Structure formats: structure tokens, C-alpha cells
Image (cartoon, rainbow, N blue to C red):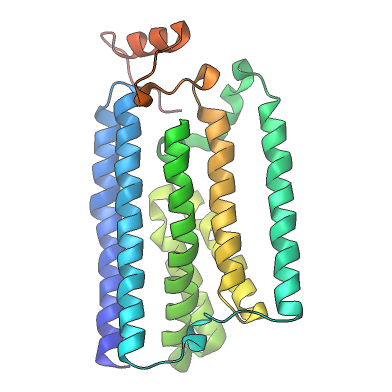
Length: 268
């Protein structure tokens, strides 16, 4: 393995450790200390910006490495699929988009008074999901970044660099495990769920011989889940406290109660 590749692997590992032990723990500390949705929203946005910065830095470093080494981009899977390898992914993307559209329509029909059950299903992960329209915009940007950058690193580079030593399937398995562990902040259940999605994205890359279908599907899954979560978590009437506009009486009462002595922040 070339020295440059060892350095890049060390860079990837450092970034993942920084994410888990610094970025995520800082966010949890800030979010648990906040007493209103305004500051909690700012903490989420700062975390998402940090994640996007980290992801694009990893990709930029990988692109520079690949260019300096004079390697073919097709070796990373950055080639456009053709024939059935193009049309089948298009059908998959349209089917997934239709499924999310149907899901969004169902959630929209649920009265605000009956959202509590759906919020409970999100569990502790709700704290890092979008609650307002402005947060949703940031989350969509994060989803697009994750779709491209994580596929580049996990399904592109990691499989390529370990394949000569572990074989294709061994390298693919390693990338799936690394992808799941990279999302350890979601807890054990989150690692397993993310690992399953990672396995599906890996299968897409291996089947169609390109990263692009997995990139689009990955971004769509993240953006779709974020949008569904926003519909569940958004304030009543979709009033957005962090945009400086007037609050509804319900929103004012919620903020007032959250600031009252002995009250704890509601991050459900």
C-alpha cells in the first residue's frame, strides 16, 4: 500500500474519531443545556455544517490524492452507467421517490395532536433531525453532501484500497462495517440500521459498476427521512421561532413553559 494511501486512511480514521469524540459530544452537551427550540436549532445547524465541512474535506483530499497518483477515476466507480445499468437505477430512484411521496402524504394527514406516537418512534435521534423549515433546508444540503461524500469514501475508496488484500467481498464487508461504526452516535440500533443501508448501497455499486446510482439513492434516502421527520417534529402551525417572526399563542406558551423553573427541554 502506497504511503499516500496510508496517510489518507489515517486522515479518514482521524476525521471519524473527531466526529464521534468531539463534534457529537459537543453537540450533545450544547443541546442538553439549551432551554428553548431556538438555541437547540442553532446547535443542530452548527453540527450539520461541521459534518458537511468534514465530509467535503475528506473528498477534496481524496480527489487530490487520486489526481497526484494519476489513477483512473473509473477505478473508484466514478463512471456513468450505461444500458440496463442506467435504466434500472432510474426505475429504483423513481420508485423510492414515489414511496416517500406517499409516506409524506400520509404524515400530512395526521393531526398535530396525534404526532406524539410518531415522535416517540424517532427516539433519541429526534434531537439531530430537522424541526423547522430553515433546519430542513440545511438537512437537505447535508443529505446531498452525505450521498456524494460518504459513497466516495466508503463504497469508492475503501473498497478499492482493501480489495487487493481482502478480495472484493472482504473489502465490501469492511466498508459496510466501517460505515455502520461511523454512525455510532445513533446507538447500537442505529449502527445496525445504517449497516443494513450500507450493505444495500454496496450491492448497488457492485451490481451496476458505478457510484452514481448509490449516490443518488443515498441522498434521496437521507433527504426523504429528514423531510418525514420534519413533518413529525415541526411546531404547530409550522411557526419557525428561529426566523424572527411572530409566534403563535401556542408557540409562545411552549417557549414560556420551557423557560419556567424546573422545566426540562422537550427534544422529542
